Length: 108
Image (tube, rainbow, N blue to C red; front, side, top):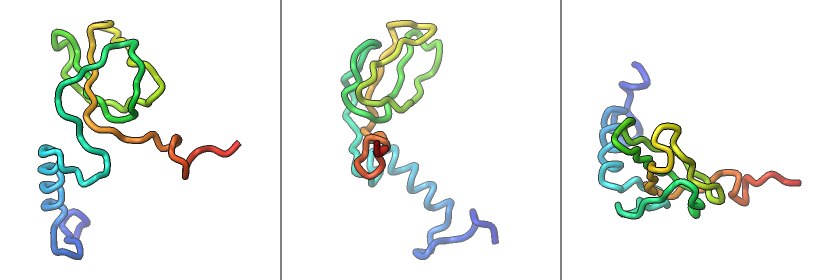
């Protein structure tokens, strides 16, 4: 039996888990400790990033469909090579940068 066709201890197959996971993502119930943010506030290039996390990137005039990227607190939002300072960023959910976590910080 392949790994994808097998089931876990609860009897749920990989397909069932995948479907459940996608449903939770769409509804905002990811089960993690980092809540999704309500739609609304957008950030401009050059503004400081105050929270590390996953941001939706919205390009002007749809030269590219929206996509997501990780942004790190302390950096600044970048310009797009095509739409320059007209690109916008929306926080999807916070996610700490692993090397800013006390258990993973590099010791000096």
